[in-house]
Image (cartoon, rainbow, N blue to C red; front, side, top):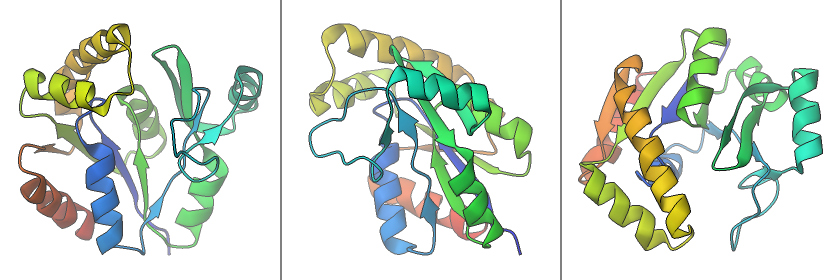
Length: 183
């Protein structure tokens, strides 16, 4: 028996992580893929739990070795998904969720065309900007870059199987739960 691959995508600041945390609390049988990144850890982030924190040389070696299911460069840093843990969970029959950006989701769709692909949308760009600013983790320049990237990502929403607007958290979570439960 093979597990189901679920891809969760949406702009930075849309609430993917918050929705995912609540979903995983309801479904402990789901496996959350841990991504690798070259960005510095944020306060409270733990290597191997929140991300695998690689330096650029190691990340580029992983790319060259074909050890990443997907990868992208975003805001001056690399992000990617190590393939071995993903395939191991699928082989065990466990469903696995990847919380990744648009470029990565496109790469995964080529390798796993049957993956369930879900796009999380903000109610509008003004709300998204407010959420990003309230996090307090990005410089003004990084916020502008994230908003510009959000416009590009939102324009690609039709590439996904399902779209959920994260306006009301409980409603968005219920829809995500319904989609993942049917996977």
